[in-house]
Length: 41
Image (cartoon, rainbow, N blue to C red):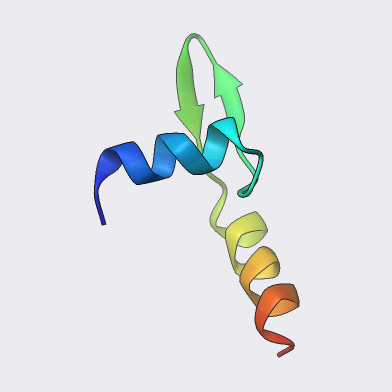
């Protein structure tokens, strides 16, 4: 997966993230929860 894909998803609010000191942070628990909801786990 390309880095620009992740930035596009962030810009489109498709994945949860935090922004701290100009850096994007992704919490594994939030990403896992997003995937569970999307896939109906």
